[in-house]
Image (cartoon, rainbow, N blue to C red; front, side, top):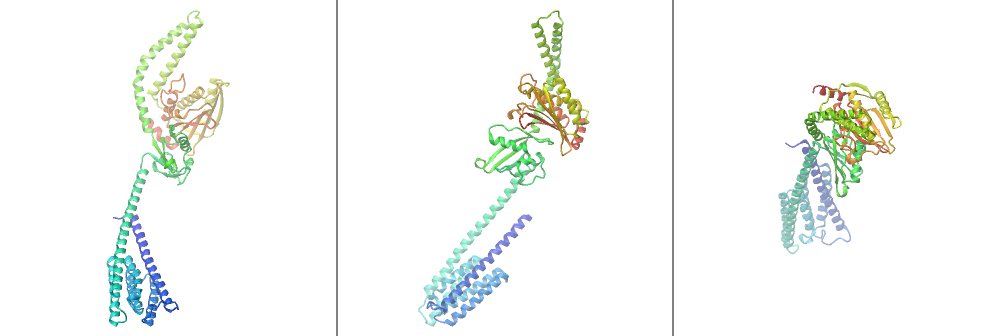
Length: 548
């Protein structure tokens, strides 16, 4: 059963074809009117050829006037579209043959040459009407011309003109058959073109359906960065369900636009992943130029790597869990003995400076190994959190003062950007560990050449009701190639680190339903932003965690 769209297209096609048929009739009527006016003008002028109306001027004038009147009548009927198209075309061609034969008879018969004018009318019948009707009028015109030749021969006015009549008849049939073949070929070509158009339309709908239902986000932007196509997955991943067409990519996602700029500057370099605040998606953008040199735009494919990352991390955690018991029993007990022995050596009488230094190294490295073991054990056993509605501004101010006093005001320079009223449902103890680890990481990697740390702590309320917390420094920042790796376990950007600090931070954020992402700070430095869930998302998250 045809679809409503197919019915509408067919109705539109029928209207166009009907308009074209009436337009062809109008052209034929105008041609008829022009020829009759021209013939009558030539017949009544001083420069008229002798053949026009030389046998019967009165008949010539009467036939011309009759044809002129019919031509005007046809124009009126064409305008009114009454009677219907086929009947009117048949009557017009029939009238043309009759008037043409009368004009030819009044001008001396077939030898006058006026019969050649009927070729156009017969050709019009072949184009406007069916092939059978076209052949019928070609035969009718041939018989009329032949009858005129016989009648002239019987009257004895002139020598017989049968060859001219036969030539005209052959011309009528030849033109009719030729135009019928051309018309048939054109109709076949039109049918094939319509089929191709339908196939292309169906293929376009299929492609659109596939693109819109892909799990990966698809965005097409032009060279100016304006969005030309975006599918449903990309709208969901970038939290833009009501995105208007022709929106700049910068307005949709500034981070994605910056990654597009990085890719255009260095296509061979890997592009960092994308995390949108408030969304649970971790997206890996992939860019493909469209057209030669990307002049037709860029195809952006957003692949959600969250399931792969989660599976990869679960595999790591499973392996880590199997090692935890061995680490606890096989390393911690000997380590305790080493530390105890070092303490006994330190209590010995009069240890030398070199011995004291060695004892200090043993104690420091033992403490470091013990910290690594604590971190590993903490990862393998996630204690249940106790979430409370925590106002972030006073809590951050208290933690900042504690961190500065612990490391000395001369070493840490604090800058607070606290928005009153920003609150989140979170476990305070775990949040303290998260922010403290971030501040310690900034002290280790974000300090200036003089060892001083310019640390900024801030919080704000998002439009969706969730809160955002950030920790920023003015250090050298994180290279783009490493931004996707810093949250992986055992990845360390410098000597002396276990590579578990930021991984623990991310795991604790996920345990509280929050998301953490690294952003490049304007003016230099690293900025870690934590987006806590909105009240609706938090209400759905914590019962789930408690039910585990």
